[in-house]
Length: 374
Ligand code: UD1
Image (cartoon, rainbow, N blue to C red; front, side, top):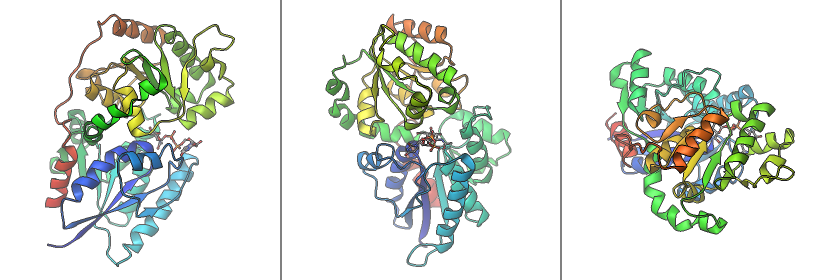
């Protein structure tokens, strides 16, 4: 059997938990050699290294060190450096047979483009998701990546519908389930042992976990201060824990909104502002929460898998199954809607939801089987 070399690309925090089970599944095939490439889009230890440790991922074989920048700068740096790496092949002189990308970050799109321009076929994991909101950078990344990929691994039925409508041949589309939930189910027992709520002195099962980092929510002073005001109100009823993404932290400082977090001068309770947490610490926190309030796509899915109510601070979602079958409700940035849903949760009237089909811990194995057949 001929050996196949697959370049597996990661760049930003949500990529790591998706790639970890794929690498593990590929290692079961002696004819496949995965080469792990980290673009360096995320470089803070708390956004990158800690995930490699928690997920027991191998160190990247190649690191592109691209860092932060505007969309064009970041994309351009990845394009240039990926092209060099793909042209060079492996140190023992093998060429890359395929590039595997996951999710929808700038690294996903840039690596896919670099590959296809060299004639290297692209597999996209988490293909077909659409918010139909082109003001989201991730929507552009999803559309471009899917347009150049010839293997499309899909996590929920809406993704299949979208890809068929966009003209992708059905034999390229594989509904395999959700690789991120593979990681969640595998690590949940270990995460529970970490005891993050206990360490913070939080009442188990009676606190809210908040994450906010979408440019549409955090890049404008008015929107961000409105959201922080609501969170301060929520804190009056339920402790609010807020691990803050660096992007959001920078904005809070630049807009002078720190007082809304510590409650000083507002007569309100403080919000538990924390640095970004590692995978296990964070899963320990979310899995024992009363409610999650977030604008993260991944966390909408994780909450659904955990059966925990998720109030999604967005007007739309590319993951509609988390709303139709799961525990998520789109509340936009409307404080009244958020407060209403929260009351429903606290009164025990919130919907319960179910875990979607194929979110069963074996999605990466299905991907491995299909890639091995190629
Ligand atoms: C990126 C993804 C987003 C994903 C998010 C998860 C894109 C377009 N966005 O957003 O889809 O949900 O990751 O975290 O790819 N920064 C640091 N340290 C780091 C990395 C970034 O401080 O290690 C700061 C820098 O100020 C940087 C800013 O965060 O400019 C934004 O980083 P960037 O990678 O551009 O996008 P994210 O907002 O992290």
